[in-house]
Figure (cartoon, rainbow, N blue to C red):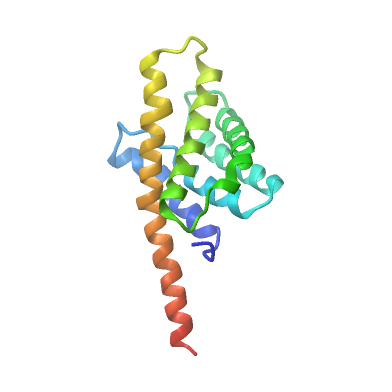
Length: 163
């Protein structure tokens, strides 16, 4: 999974971001959270923060409800905090990758809740800090792990075929 170029997980995240609201309108995924987990494990802090902010800007461009830069700010802050915890997770173990993605999603949700509505409601806390990160972890496990493992297996098989 670590041998795949970053463009592959980026386009997986972009496809999920664009097409998930069409097929599952009631589920609000943090589509770039698994991509950010991969970036945070592979890149330096400065590169990871730039990629996180640019991913947030993509979300901002498609969202007209909130002020421009809101998601860029929340993704950047979440990436800065999650970068500290990256040593405890690995990309090669799918449950670890899913848990790291859920952590990034929970951090994004917490930052967004703090900026949007300061009096917290218990149902919003439970939904945004537990259920949605759990859904993002499952999304990372199925939408990212399986295609990326298939990609690395295909590359390995192709390399051994052409020897």
